[in-house]
Amino acid sequence: MLAGTFRRTVLANGLTVVSETLDHVRSVSIGIWVRAGTRDEIPEEHGIAHFVEHCVFKGTDRRNAFEIVNDIESLGGSLDAFTSRDVTCYFVRCLDEHWRTGADLLADLVFHAQFDRDEVEKERRVVLEEIQSVEDTPEDLIHDLFAKSVWGEHPVGAPILGSPESLRTIEADRLKQFVGQNYRPDNMVLSASGHVDHDEIVELADRLFQKELVSLSRPERRAPSGAERVVRHYPRDINQTHFCLGTTAWPYDHPRQYDLLVADTVLGGGMTSRLFQEIREKRGLAYSVYSYLELLEDTGLFGTYMACDRTRLDGAVDVVWDELTRFKRDGVTPVELDSAKAQLKGELILGYESVNRRMSNLARDEIYLNRYDAPETALRHIDRVTLAGVWEACQALVDTPRMHQITVGPG
Image (tube, rainbow, N blue to C red; front, top):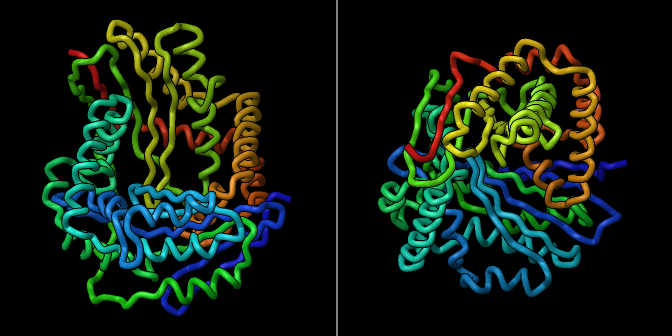
């Protein structure tokens, strides 16, 4: 059996605690997930969710920046965080004997960060360097430009890091206000996986994750609709041309999610995929080529990506469109269906050997589905995918009137 012992508790303050006890491991992964990301920002403050994530590591009421990382690394553990379009997550991985230290550290970060003005200014420079790094990395840059094109003016498509202009306007007091609005127990999920007891987690969380709620309300989220077809080139003085083509996709909780995953796997999900075989192996037109899905609360993103010499771009783009046309017309073959299902099941089973991955899956299921899907349930969903279901997913992915084509490169 892949599944551990799953339990869920909602505390009086609204914090949701989900856990999966695994008796065969010695490690624990704990994450605090905040329902606040890029989509919760106003245009003038794009990047604030990510900026908050950086600044909480600069010091709390009880720990300075060095102590924050040393308190867990000195025990052989690790601490990290990320910001996405709709969540911010802080997580630790440590030995089972140290999980309480990890939980205490997470509570300290999300509830007691100081946002010292001098430290905020230093971290602003760090994030500006991070933004510049994206600008200097075409493969990163084009995905930002592509998402912005597909979702139009909706904040879900804005760059997660923000822009230099927006970042320079965000002061320490505004960071505190954003935290007050969003970093609330009733807007969080505490997720844990590993050799840990649920009741003990709940008992500690009930003490650590207490916060006096402020009267500031959180802006309501609105669903993005997606923009009409766009073809746009961004000139850059580089050797290759980078290419993205795609459109919106079904959200995370769509009942046909696994049909979508199988379709994406066949199209561009590995070295045996159609795009890789046709563009790289058979024609030698590009080194890097793949497709991908990003599934969110109420929307999704489907994209194809490749990078090639500008002299081969037109031919490579023709191949991508030919494959997408064939994909929509014919769907996938029985052999491709079986292969993609086996690939997805293998990736799922291997992923469940990681407590970090399991912790993340627990949190995402809670946030996006409001339920727990055990590993065996996910495997059954994959097994039930049919040729007809994948064909319908192909129709959704290749929505020609709403396809966005973005290129970054010379010319």
